[in-house]
Amino acid sequence: MSVHYTIRINGNEYTIERDEQGGFTVNGAPLDIDYPVSSRDELLRFRHRSFTTHIDETSPDGTSYRVNVNGWDMHVDLEDEKTALLRSLQSDKATKVHSALVRSPMPGKISRVLVNEGELIEAGQGVVLLEAMKMENEIKAPSAGIVKFIHIRESDTVEKNAVLIEIS
Image 1 (tube, one colour):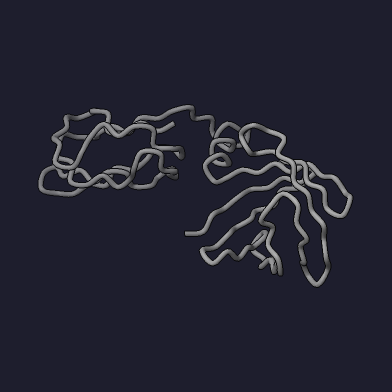
Image 2 (image 1 turned 45 degrees about the vertical axis):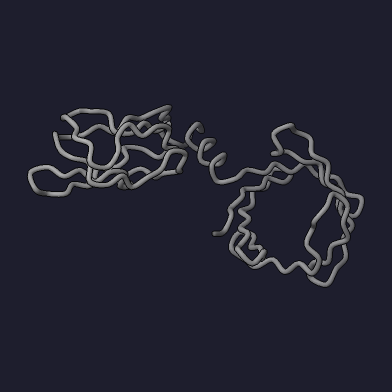
């Protein structure tokens, strides 16, 4: 499973992806590093050029760094997928949703829960399969967010408007 990060360096934003084999892409373009950074001080070769790097963590949560490359200091902010989603939900560009409840639109039996607590979900993503009147209905998330709490389990019977899942 690949890992995605958003990195801001001196006001410019980049999307970094690290695959299972340790390879990197930056904004979708492959990044070929001969000697990957593995400590705070490292000699690194990139595109046939050598770089001396030094990294200092400047925030207790591990999201902000001072990086020196060949004597040039820069400030780097690092966000993982979950932090980036939370930030986007709170920005002025996004719909301001602080929390949402997924409710049962009708009485029925929960045949399957499609998400897990702590999972990032998108608006319109299926979260629960509800069996009602011998039909299976997919209940979708009203907004993007993180699954905060799942109130039901498979085989539970629910009434109309029962809270199934909390999203924050």
